Length: 554
Image (cartoon, rainbow, N blue to C red; front, side, top):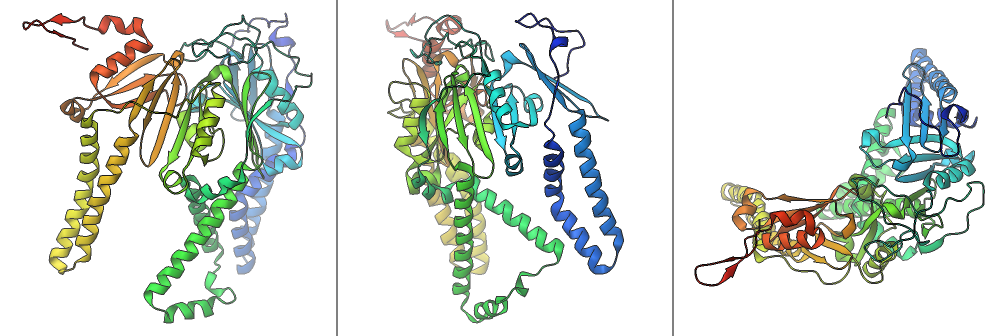
């Protein structure tokens, strides 16, 4: 956001913006900033120095030295030109010398406060404060990189503090703040705060209520998560690039020739098994290491200031605080491997300020993958529900939805099967036919599993929807969190007589989808949640010529 040119109004305590002092980043940033940048440049600098020294060309060494000097100078300039201040109304950050940036976030638009402490920051007692405003990624708040750890905790409490409001309960029959608070406004963003009286930020905060903590039996899910496997692949690719750049050959390692000789004389199937086994071993060990680093000392707590707080991390400490007044629901995700092989799931928060892609990347996760029953219990506890929210029976969708999934799964599988059939025709081989038939056969249970996952339920407090097979997601959206509806119907859906109903909300990805729903059920669902806006679109029953009655739903 661009800072307005006109002076802002006075703060609630009678002070003006000019009376609020600007703060600078601590001097430790003179060490941490350049060191962090140099670590990112380390592979390139090492290559320059090694090749320059080995070839006798000092130019590359001088280039590496100049890069170090420029990086240090940039860190000094960044520290010198960065300042911030917090008033009763706004959080402002000024930075930059050649390109000056002025960022300003209204405090009533702050949705989340995320504290992150990478290893270098922790060594010198610093933390990064990320203030989320729940808007677009290009304008999603501001980052204070970095302040002292004590200052970061004080800022977290200060930025999430809200003035007291009248006691009330939400439509879900729960008190999100735990202290008698008013329900949050639904205005496309959020109009309310936590509802609890603001505590002086210099006063020690009482301990929060612990809702969940790490259970190391969850380690068995580490090799089954796609994010861990993707991270292992990224690390392996980066390592291979470094080896190529430095000219190191893994075959030159001690014992490499002996292993290569043994594999060259072994049967092909044995070589393949050894390669697959080595790959699986690296993936399993790497995923466990990443899991431990990510979820070490994980704790989920409900703080006295009316926030849900997730703390985790070994080398990089992370702390995400979400105001319960921003909470619009909860989710439970079940990746295929985690669900099928481990019976696990992962609970997440559906909150204003947490974008859909952030939630998928782990920012909205309330904990690591755990047993399915435990994940549902965590989701219910986080939502202050008195009973199961994301668990329980759901209303099945029409059989036409099952037909659609069979067609959409088997149809694409027929394309490679036909290609393999052509290969078998020309090569007179059997294996292409076997592979093609296997692809088509495997598509059928996948389609049926996707249909079994379809379902929805509307109870007194929540709209619950579930879909997906590779990633089965159950979303429980609070009824007072629905701010509108969107109906989508493709050409094939029109032919099948179904539609997709989207309950729009200010949280998460912006909507909760109910896939392949019968039109009459969609109208009834909308009318039950938001009767007034939907009433003009409902056509009253009409008497037919035969004396019966029918209802046309538009």
